[in-house]
Image (cartoon, rainbow, N blue to C red):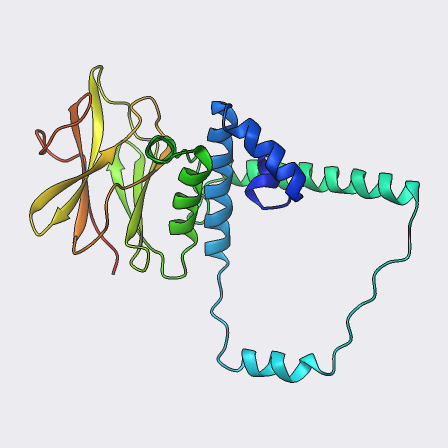
Length: 242
């Protein structure tokens, strides 16, 4: 049900049951985070700004367009067929999201994971929602840079939400006892923005703290647990998109 949940395609009863399961299932929480982030990014890629005349056109047509009446097919067969259709639709949605998550390109991020955000939130749902909210924000802006050895890093910023998400793809794992640490660049002063998962080469991480007046972000290799200030040369430096 992870795919259907990520697309808000469950009934209230199904959603409540799945969320109870999600609270105790780490693998489902991870998969839900990946699918939600992918769905949000796909939605962002297809975003179109409506014309200024759209509202007036809709209001003018309200009084002249008739509502389509509900269908008349009822009974047990209809109920069973409807249930089968919903299940097939959910499988299709999950398959589409899974396929999208494995495709390359600028509109789909691979194997996204939000473990850092999940650890900082009270539940997996809250962490997933924070990342998805930044990725899907109307004002979200992205900047991408190569990280070497085929890896890439992208930072997505929502000024309205005062939040940023860092997305890494193909990033080499740090040496044992080390971790990648994220930083905001506040006019030359590096402010810690959280740690990445050292066991993942592909992940999406919600940067801790507000964007505020930061002009950029960086990634360094630090001892496990992180440092109060950078102790190594940056692995990556990205200016924040305007």
